[in-house]
Each structure stands twice: as structure tokens, then as C-alpha cells.
Length: 401
Image (cartoon, rainbow, N blue to C red; front, side, top):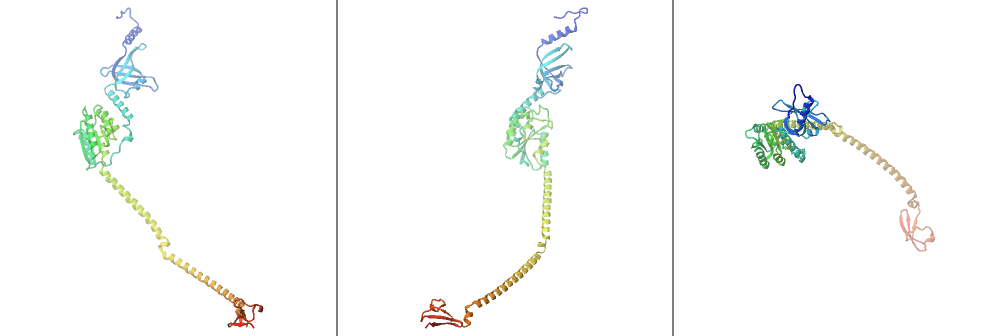
């Protein structure tokens, strides 16, 4: 019922504010769509504040929400994001201001799309599809480069021209497909499978020029990402520009910032390789020359030694030593022989002095019986026994009377 008031019977401000608060309180929770104009969140605070602006009309409302509600929004809210808020209108009597107490916040439009991509990113990361250990190294010089791109696109031209400029003889197999729209994912997936089955293809490049998030959405689709992860051939992602980051960049074995950069990744530069080969050749030549110089110095040092410079000098010294040794041996042997000769003379003289022959020479005789015993006593000889008599001049037989 409308209030009955007049200039003579007005109602206080507090009454109007209370009535407005009662009406707002009966409104209940409502879904409100708007654009985040200002986000305020203090570290450690349990309540956050944001301003929700109508993008068409110049109208805005303050939204309060618990910090946990804001934390559940994926991707995190930022100024300019469009959202829908499930909130209860609240009228503050003290200041006469209207605000919304949010219970749930959901991104819409691009925000919802980013939220879905973030959820898929989390799922694939948990499965290990982004892990660095599963990524394969690119070949140094592929036999054939497979390229998946749009027909007549700038991405195709950039990859082909730069690859052939870097290595003119490189073989390239191009698969033209739709790179946006509903047919993009199945066509790219089929082309990828055909190239992966070709044993001549050593690396595959998926290339597309820049575009909006919606245009690049096919390169974040789960079916395509799993197909890339299942490839046996290394895959290079060359989607958009440096700031574009579809999920294909995370699953592929290598990421190129642009299609031109993809050519640099998969094909070596013949000029750079020739220059590097020349540098290695020069380095090897210098190393060999340095090694030869060191060995020459060692050889010169050895040749400078007296034993190698004049080897006959050592032989002369050894010959002199041998001559001296021979002379010492000769003198030593002579001395030994002289001493032995003297000793032999003395021994002979003693032998002659003691020899029975000397006694016999003086007229004595030695008698021996038939058994060879020397007769020392006449009683030892029987009468008529023959004896041998030894004298200085010889031997003869005698008989005892």
C-alpha cells in the first residue's frame, strides 16, 4: 500500500530507508550479469569487494563475497571480465546504499571458455601429457617435414619459404586442412594420422596464423591434443603469435612462437652449418698443429741430448772403460800367475826336498815286498823271498839269503 504523506505529515528518512530495505530483502537471491570494473582484495581478508558494471548503461553495483567464492572462479577474475553473479540484494540503512552479497560467481562468454580450457589443462597435466620427459627430441636433418596448415595460408608460405631458404634440399609434405570452424579438429587429426604413418616423415609441424581465442579454440580441443600425444613422430606446434598459447603448445614436443620460427626449429641453416663446420675444421687444424709442435719440441729436446747428438761419444767412453778394465784384468791375472808361479816353485822345492827320489839319489834303496809293502824291518822278510829294490836309476829284483 502506498504511504500517505504530505508536506504537513512527512515521514522520517529512517522510515523510508527501512521500507526500502524491507522491499529489497523480499527480493531474494537473483542472477545478475555484468562486467567487473574494480576488484579489491586485501591479503588475509575474509571478504572481497568488486564493482559490477552494466556494459550498456552507466549503472554499477558493489558486490561483496567471501574470499573462498572468489578463489573458486577459474580463470581468476580480472578487471573487464564478464560474469554472472548469484547474489542477494542488500540495502545498508546506515548509508542508504544498495549492494549485492554474492554466493556464486561464474564467468560468461570468453571467461567461460577460458574456464573450460583451464579445466582441460588441469586434467591433461594430471595425466602427464605435458610432462617434459615424454617429449621427443627433434631430428637434426629430417628426411621429410610434414606440415599441417590452411590452404594458401600465410602460415604455409612462412614455413615453406623459410625452410627451403635454410636448407634448399629439404623435402616437405603439405597437408591442407581447415584451421578453424567445426571441421578443423577432424581434418587436422586425420592429416596428423596420415603424416604419422609415413615412414619418410621425421617431424610434423602444425601451423596457423594468429587469431582470437575463439579462432584458435580447435587447437585446444581434447581429441586433437590426445592425437598429438599418441603420435610416434615428433610434433611442433606453431599456432598464432608469441602471445597465443593454445593447449597444443603444451602437448607438442616443441613449441614455435610463429610459423617462421617453426622452420628454424625443424630445419638447420645450411650457411650456419657450413660456417660451424669450417670453425670445427679450423679448430681441429689448430689442435693438430699445436700437438705436432709439442711433439716437435719434445723430439728436438731428445735430439739435443748428448747421447743422441753424438752417440759415438758414449761408445768411446765405454770403449775406454772396457780397455781400462781389460788392462786391469790383465795385470790382475799376471799378478795372480806370478804369485802362483812363485808358490809353485816353493812347493816344488819343498817337494823335492822331501821326495824319496832325493834320498835314492844319494845312494839309498827302497825295498818292497810282492804285495807292495815297504820293508822297514829285516824280520819282515823271509829267507829266499824276492824283493823289489828301487834305486835312483831304476828298479830291480833281489832275493834274501
